[in-house]
Image 1 (tube, helix red, strand yellow):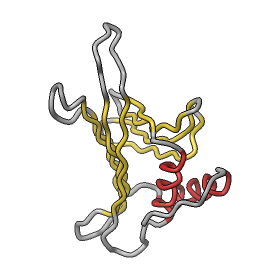
Image 2 (tube, helix red, strand yellow):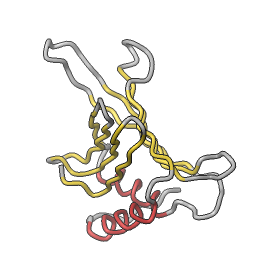
Image 3 (cartoon, helix red, strand yellow):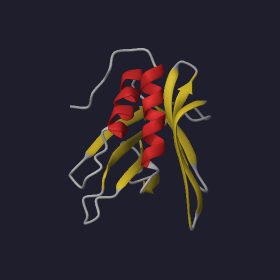
Length: 150
């Protein structure tokens, strides 16, 4: 995968990553934790542009801010059983007292199967300046119409 937006961090459990890049013809989000990783596609390049713009628009001052994406992949297990994956990616400011920025990834199994959360990767206080620089570079170099978050 050719990463264009990349965030890595460590906590008491180990290393974590949220990476967006092109994988063949698809734009994908790769989420990794100390014991689990998965990737899910974006609906298309316009969704990645919206993510980049959301990172650029992340307020410097405390105010309500949250942008979210729904990702999914339909597939089958090695035994031929259907196995759909669903996830959400959120960029925002914590609504608590400090309004710290965050990136949150949460994945779920197919709603028709076992309920509950499968995997969660939350980066509290990500390197916003670094992410903004990556987002700016992506929007400058990725052809297509400009996309602004409403």
